[in-house]
Length: 173
Length: 185
Image 1: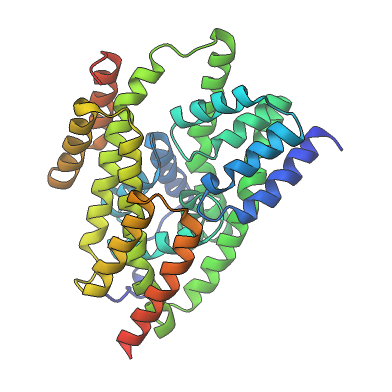
Image 2 (image 1 turned 30 degrees about the vertical axis):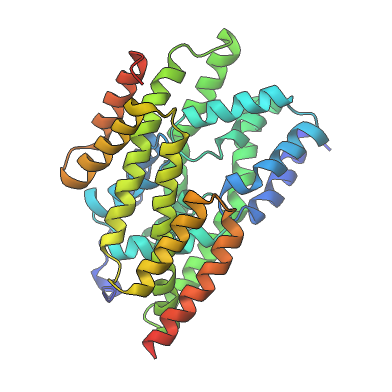
């Protein structure tokens, strides 16, 4: 089988089990890419993980980089599509069905039940992202000031990111 | 809060869907979710806060990155299958190009000078933005002991105890939904 076809097949299967996002399939992506197919070495996998985190957008871009490493631009496109299209197709049809039951009592109960958990997860993500930052008082201050300004002012967070990035570049974080 | 009838939903063209999700993806350092909420709820007002929380809750249960699912769900709502594709491509266009550029630079130069330092600062700010977004979403929740209880359980299990997401989600969600159903009856 050509490398492109192998990439497509492997990542399409993983797409449908990635409940909770790509984090939950990372160990399996690592096994497939490093141990089974030897597409990348352990060190390259780690580098790609770091580079994917440096780019904006979802961290599934790690998969894009693996595809790129194996087969250039076509590999990047195929890997990205493979990991997204099955789960996106499922989302598309589920949301269509969901839309049809708008106003149904059971749907309202599901939404009322899921909402607090969803918010709890977002807060937990914020906590974990902040914890994943280097730590120290400078980092905690940036986190707290950003949260406060976003909550209580109408400032565009882009400026806060730019300022925080600059503080980092100056070696203050 | 009851959802507005379908006729009240704003009209959104395919071009607007592309630009909206492009802007969310382009700014999404440390995660695109807060930017998607800002774009959908605060900047373009395509969704009410309640609609956002409901749709995002659904997306957490579907496989794949929740924000990618969100682009498909919102895109299909305003533009059918074509809308879903346009929103999805919009979200990923810039991140895709940026990550390949970074990888090419890394391959060529062996390191990315300054990137680590910049990311240390941005990472700290990103945590604050996600946290503030969570607090904004919490404002829309009913002030009941049940809602607050399940919110705290999810936060403690995932954020503090760092338990794996999937079992936590599939344990808490049925209980919370059941509680909401019984409360309604």
